[in-house]
Amino acid sequence: MARVLGGYARLLVVEGAAGSGKTTTLAAAQKMLESSGSRMIIVTPTLQAASVAAAEVGAEAHSAGWLVHQHGYRWDDDGFSWRVAADPQPAAQLGYGDLLLIDEAGMLDQDTALALLKIADENYARIAFVGDRHQLPAVGRGGVLDLAATCAGTRGRWSLETVHRFSDPEYAELSLLMRSGDRADYVFDTLLARGEVVIHPSMAEALQLLTRVDGLVVADRRDLVSQLNSTIQDTRHSATTGGLQRVGTRDGRIFGIGDPISTRRNDRELDVANRDTWVITGFDADFTVHVTGRRGRRALPPRYVYEHVELAYATTAYGAQGQTVDTAHLLLTETTGAASAYVAMTRGRHRNTAHLVAKDVATARQQWVQAFSRDRADLGPNRAATIAERDVERYGAVRPPMPEDLRRT
Image (cartoon, rainbow, N blue to C red; front, top):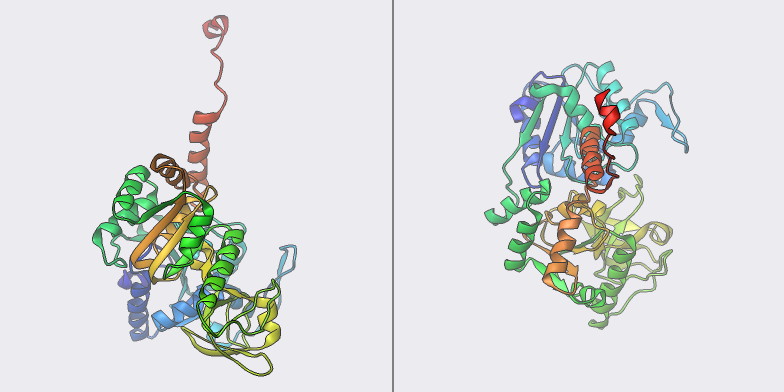
């Protein structure tokens, strides 16, 4: 795969399941390109994903929005686009033989993808889309990864099929079934026997248990994430003597040392990205908040904290995609879809646990199966047509039989 990325194909699509080693592959391809005198520039739909890719791959990485802006593309609030004359920074310049690689390409919208394709074409650069159509789709007009796979043809499409992330080989096989949605009832029963499905008699009891777990907690609804964050913070700080510092946010929360937080707006001066996660380490007299995270230490001014910071004990599936942790927990509800469930249940290297609220095992199994039949992944128009035909067969009106006299004619 690294040799393919470091080769000569103008358009490539690389797909792989969660934990299949996409990032490791990119690091190897980067070394091959450097040895041949070419560059690999990585862009991602979000700045947070770009920072992760840059750290793990060792290559330049930026948000896709930054790159297209450098090349003169502009959009207004209504989505209309135009292009102005621009002089891109050296980091945004592409040349013959360079590889423009879009990571997490399943989350890329069509307008940005079109701009990236034009930039690559104008500069005689190659382009590669890397991602997983079974994970979360774009916010906006998506289907980019599916369209790219169609255009690349069989010789331009490649797949990473072996899962390396999980310490348990049996769970790796189960994760592939969750990715495809196949045999959902078998997956549920297996996870239940392994202790990786927990059934709660009420939502209150589920939330209470999740306040005591270690690891990443994921829910698909913002209201549940907010409730989890508040409950977990209250529980953990009530057990300490330090209490909370008086640094407030727009939603009325106050923070304390040790709280995990998420920055929710890109700010290049502060060097923070939307959905970056940090842990609070201290406060200044002027209420500047000191944090530490995967990318080092930062000092966040009070105004930014008030407007653009939230607790991160729990997160949505969109906030979890791209993360790899030791343990993860999913609160599965009647609104959870297949893509969200698959993302949440593949974050933990050593353990992933689903929590459901149901009166008995049969009801919980039905909830699980229904979740994996709600296909929110952006698998393109052909997949959408297949699902529509299937739903028509199951729920649509039955065509009446043709009258005998018409059949004769």
